[in-house]
Image 1 (cartoon, rainbow, N blue to C red):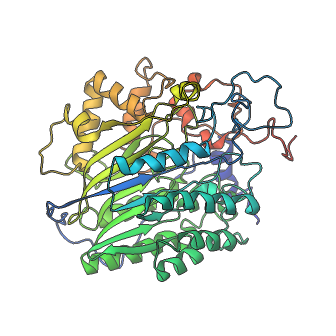
Image 2 (image 1 turned 90 degrees about the vertical axis):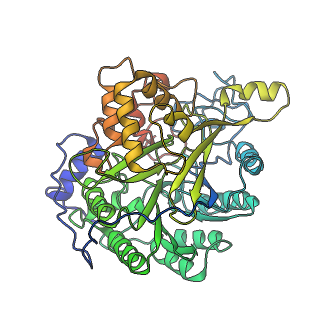
Length: 508
């Protein structure tokens, strides 16, 4: 892989990886679509028949998790036995997990065992990231068995799961070669296809082996497109081999082809991804092009979008004009809560109530386990209590009333963000639920800029529209306590530096 560090490649690297340069201007241009957008398109009327759909994200199971090990270790992930681990830990890891660590295997298994008591879901979506955050140690020999074990655990749900490729699926982490960069990651796509063969038809598996992306039709009139968003991820260093290629591996062109076929067939579509194009670590040119795709095929084709990566319970909105109003809101990106408690979050999952005619969401339930009780569960020889944290319709409907026969539309969500602007209690409710009611969520309302920046981000389907400053991989946050982190820092925790206190690291 070679990059022109004195030209455009270098400018993007300087901004995205080091934060030492201004953001490069958006230069991706305007897409050309096979057909013009129909006049006055609209979503179909709901059928009045509903199904439950389970949303899992950011599993991040750590099969090296050791009960009683150091939970405050100064490395990107703790609760393991390292060569420099102290004899007496500052905070001993409970068997069910710790807020500073990835998912204990028994916690993931307990969650899977409890999910059927809350929902009889027709199917599930899994928006990526199975391996832990030991990014300096991950490679093919560690990734493949970790993925296989995790998908075997998920298979106990006895429902079809439609998965997605996260940035942690690769080994080394984040690195997905492009056609321009050279390199080969077929071993990953092949192993994932083997794991997914129990759920996907052969044509989808063939596509997954080639692109790390696929499309499938679970039933007539409905299509799921699983997109490989690692080709927009700023920490995928292969992208800097040729940054003027705004659509690496033609992912967006492939997406347009699938959406046009869906429009021609009168299908409704769900898009799955890992890195949300609204997030600051999606390359801005790619994000801007994706926004054009959403605007072209919404609201009549694209019913909903689903992502993960941030670990928060969140959402983002798309508009058909630069004027961001409830009238111009056309699409919602649902950003799923993580299974992992990393970092300072409760483990959780979502269940959607979905109309199986329009395939729009009418209700969203988030379930969590309060990990602050982990030591108590050990002391009393008990298990986690998984509980309903909140209903989106009931919680936010108290501030923005919604008709019983109306979906949780982008227009409604825009009005919810307006309530956040005008009502501190509404915003604080969002802020608490965003962090899955974890005890150590940093404060936001006492900041003069945080609330307005967060509301801006909710309305930013494009990464260049976000208002929160981003942090960079060169900034050492290991010395900062999680409770001191601003929400801006937390947007880039996936970029914790790998060159400090890492056993087995070439940087030691």
